[in-house]
Structures are given as structure tokens and as C-alpha cells.
Length: 254
Ligand SMILES: Nc1ncnc2c1ncn2[C@@H]1O[C@H](COP(=O)(O)OP(=O)(O)O)[C@@H](O)[C@H]1O
Ligand SMILES: [Mg+2]
Image (cartoon, rainbow, N blue to C red; front, top):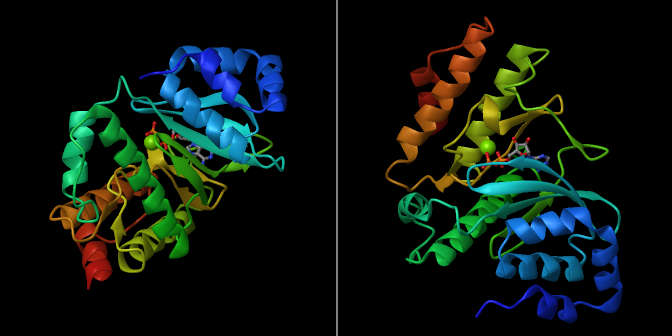
């Protein structure tokens, strides 16, 4: 049973309730965008101190919204919140089934979106522990994920699709090294790598690990090749001479 907003608010401690009422607009918008269960999850993370205050929305993507928030210590964090009702959960389920880390994938919309979120968190953890440049994962619950905010003063760093790297050779090399480390040390393929999922600080940071899969996936090599091809295509357009994708691939999987 879905609870109504009032009963959820009653569950919060007094201070937080007052704060939510005072902080107004963003919460009102969130109350319209998300279902009650998602709001409850957000409020639980607020009570854990993972989030304290939500600022504006950074991105409204196909499946998820990204918000900038502050944690209880005043550090910026990014909140990735998957929408339940409008997600293409059949497609998500298809991609989860190939990932050997998930033995049983739920059949229902909500279960699929929760598993999807936990996979993204797990991917960030594995990548972060292997030393791949990714946002540090902080916490996740159900369809809500908290990670390090890649930006300054609440403003995200630009995506590589919007800003050309100052030193294309250096950025390309760093990205190939990241893909190699991801494959060899984290056992993962990003699977959605392109200029749309790289932020420049100006050093490149890989984001959006929702499609990330383990290297035992039957599709892993095909997905790795596609990631490499996307990077090569982007950097060749900038005029950089790069090795052939097949050479880079062979070097990584050898
Ligand atoms: N950790 C982060 N810190 C700051 N901004 C982020 C972070 N993660 C994502 N973003 C911003 O949100 C946008 C969408 O995030 P992404 O994970 O790629 O979601 P989508 O699945 O919608 O593509 C990114 O292009 C980037 O601008
Ligand atoms: Mg993306």
C-alpha cells in the first residue's frame, strides 16, 4: 500500500519536517515528480544524513533525474533518482539478465528498477576500488543512489560532448587507461561509454554506470569494442591520430 505524504512526513523527526516545509519549492516539485514510495526513500536517506538539503535538478534523463544536494556535513552530493512509472523496465531487465552477478532478476517493474539501481551502485564501487576515475559511491536505497558530486560550488563540470578536451592526446590516453583498468582490475565493461558519459574536471571522469556489466557477460567483448569505437570516433573527429579500435581492444583483453 502506498502511504500518503502526510503519514510519511509524520515519520520524520520534527526538525526535518520543519526544514522540508521551509525549503519549499524543490520539495513541492519532487512531490509531484515522484511516487510516494520514492519520496519515503528520499526522506529515509535525509534522516540518515546522506542528504540534507536538495538544490536544483541537474538533469532529467530518460530513466533518472539527477539532483545536486548537500549532505549533513555540508558537502555536495549527487542524487540519481530512477523514476519507477516511466522507466523502460523490460529493456532494463533484458540487460540485467546478461549480467552474471545477478542470479535472479525480478519480473516486476519496481523490482527491476531497484536491481538496476543497485547494479549501478555496485559498478561504481568496483570501479572506484580499482582506482578508475568515477564518482565515489556513497549510499543507495531502492531507486535512489547517492554519489560524490563532480563539480564545484554545486555546478557540475562539463560533459566531454560540450567541451573539447584541452589536450586531446592526454585525455584519450587517460580514457583508454580507465577502460583497461575497469576491464582488468574491476572486471567490468562500461557499455555506454561516449562523450555523453565523460565529465572533464579537466581530467576525465567516467559517469553513468547503469549499463555497466561484468566481463563474464556473453556480450562483454562486443560492448567493450563499442565503447572503444565511440572514444576513437570522438577523438579522431578532433584530429587526433589513434590506433585502430581492434588494436586497443586486443591490448586490453590480452
Ligand atoms: N556525480 C555527478 N556529479 C555531478 N553531475 C553529475 C553526476 N552524475 C551525473 N551528473 C550529471 O547528470 C547528467 C546525467 O547523468 P547520467 O548518470 O549520465 O544519467 P542518464 O542515465 O540520464 O544519462 C550527466 O550528464 C551529468 O551532467
Ligand atoms: Mg548518461
